[in-house]
Length: 225
Ligand SMILES: C[S@@+](CC[C@H](N)C(=O)[O-])C[C@H]1O[C@@H](n2cnc3c(N)ncnc32)[C@H](O)[C@@H]1O
Image (tube, rainbow, N blue to C red; front, side):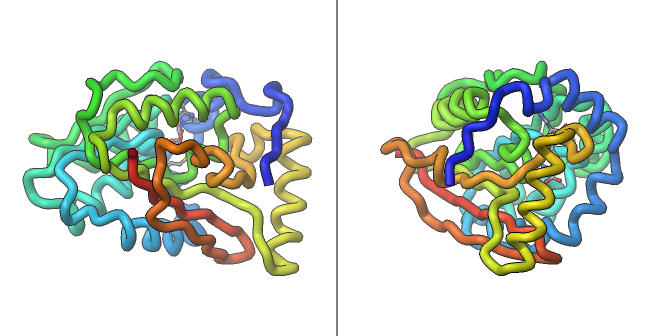
């Protein structure tokens, strides 16, 4: 279900930065619907054999800390970026125990990734693709492909469309509110990740939907060809 929305519906990078600078640590409150889908992604991304992880839109660093503490080999490298200075400070503080091999930096809000070609074996992004405009996503996906080693995995979780009557009703209300005032929702709205990852450059490994509290998330893990 590809929805091509007018580009002025999406938050500009400056608007996204303002929203997430204000939201700060309250972002973690959304764990009540995000965590089951994030668990599903972790379960299918083989982090135990990863050497280097790049995260786009790392928020407060919660996922990074979890990966470093429980799932990645002790010598794995982590690099996260976020447009929000508040989020970057929170993530840097949280990742202090791993400061020798984990770094978090503030991005300029553009899809360009300031990392060399083929320098990571996982590219992770959770609940970020659903706030980005289509042309931004196209560029970001080609950047993800560029920084991943061949066979490296893209590991995504995003808000998507529900199937049950209740989750479809939640989606309908959410989408209406997003069209009316996307800023209230931090720019997030339901999308289908598979619409963006159709290119031959990606080989799907695992794709599923998880609904919690009426909000449906899509989990998509694919390998770079
Ligand atoms: C809904 S939050 C999700 C945060 C985290 N990934 C999580 O799952 O809790 C979206 C995050 O994307 C960041 N973000 C939004 N637009 C961005 C951009 N253009 N570049 C980098 N980060 C961005 C926000 O600052 C925010 O931290």
